[in-house]
Amino acid sequence: ITTSPLTGTPTLKSLAPPAMITQTIELTTGALWTNSVDGAVYVYVAGGKFTMGADGAKAVSPLEQPAHPVTVDSFWLQRTEVTNAQYGLCVTAKACTPPTNQRWQQTEYAQHPVTDVTWAQANAYAAWAGGRLPSEAEWEHACRGDDDRLFPWGDQPPTDKLSNYNNNVGDTTPVGSYPDGASPVGALDMAGNVWEWTTSLEQNYPYNATDGREDANAAGKRILRGGSFYYTQYQLHCTTRSGFVPATANQHFGLRVVVPSQATTWTNSVDGAVYVYVAGGKFTMGADGAKAVSPLEQPAHQVTVDSFWLQRTEVTNAQYGLCVTAKACTPPTNQRWQQTEYAQHPVTDVTWVQANAYAAWAGGRLPSEAEWEYACRGDDDRLFPWGDQPPTDKLSNYNNNVGDTTPVGSYPDGASPVGALDMAGNVWEWTTSLEKAYPYDATDGREDATATGKRILRGGSFYYTQYQLHCTTRSGFVPATANQHFGLRVIVTTPAGGQK
Image 1: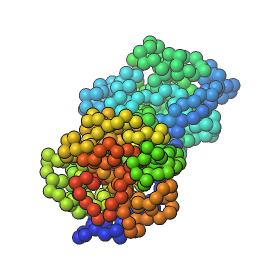
Image 2 (image 1 turned 180 degrees about the vertical axis):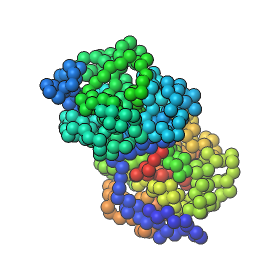
Image 3 (image 1 turned 90 degrees about the vertical axis):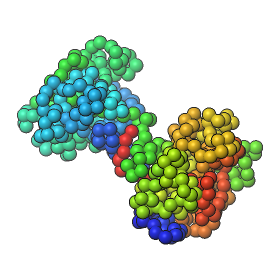
Image 4 (image 1 turned 45 degrees about the vertical axis):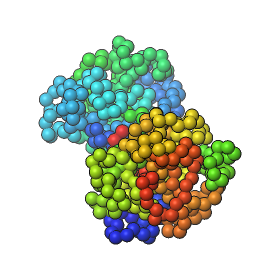
């Protein structure tokens, strides 16, 4: 997608075809995400079964025995340990208390891991950052993957190129200083530098998350993982466990944060829009019989889409105004897009080409109608985003009940299965797709951005009845059409940063 500013009257040739976007964000191990709360980068760790613990000569202590299979869910793991600079932000926000040292405020140690924090302080930071500490099962899975390795980098003993250990440096080092020592998921400093607090109580194996060891209110020692700059190679094993009283704080203890994958949203720094992640999959597109509002929706058929990030609400006047100011968009054909009282209302009176220009400026594109419908109804064939219950004034802005658009996100009870809002009512939303008969086939020319013909809008508007609010309802219009009922939302396939 091109992002060059549009001048004069937009034309279809102003934009490259959406088909040119070939990279999609499949949330696989190693994908990156940036938390704007503290600027920390996270790596995605796909859930699965792995061998936890060790037997025989591989076990440093009886605490690691026996080796046993454990399954964990997917999660986001902070790529490095929390730094003094990051922890300082939490202190400034009054969500954390200072560590029991002085250098957390000193510039020369800003990128070193924070130390001298208790288990309670570590939990407070994690909560402020929007996550939690990892369980020791999650920590070990991220450290060793599924191949039972001894160290994050493999079975090779540590060297000064792989880890800060054995008092070789005599102090902590800036986080990420040992890229060759990365774990299978791309996490750094999982061996050495500082021990890292986990959520888990020190209890015997086999690990069982439901046996009380993950009770945050229970008394007892909590497990730390990973060794520190002072400890030998044996404390650097991915399986090594060390239990300490939660009130302990010293120069060897730090932390890193986990964010559960189910909770992931992303904020686009270009326009401040929040996106929700939509995991790809197969669903039923269209409707048959009485569920179909028009023949355009028939027949119901199976379609598979890739994963993507979808803007949680429709693009607002304020957001579109940023694009106009950047000279990447032309103004809508109305006056109120600049008026403060309508800043959080969805932008309207934009043509298909203007909608594409905005999406490209924001770093994404319009959704195909298959992607739009999948985000609206999920995989359970529901009629509306919220289910099969007919709409009410608590679920949607429709049927001219309000007589105008409403601020985006005004109907949280009407959320779709992926957490997207306003997918029924408020404004119709442009898609990339030409109006062509079903079954939907992305390769039959309907996704050619240079082709002539009507383009599909989805979702109904504040004026339309419940029948236009169905997740399956399709409405085709000439791309040059712009009126008070037409708006848009954006898909981004490769987020470059943002926040949970």
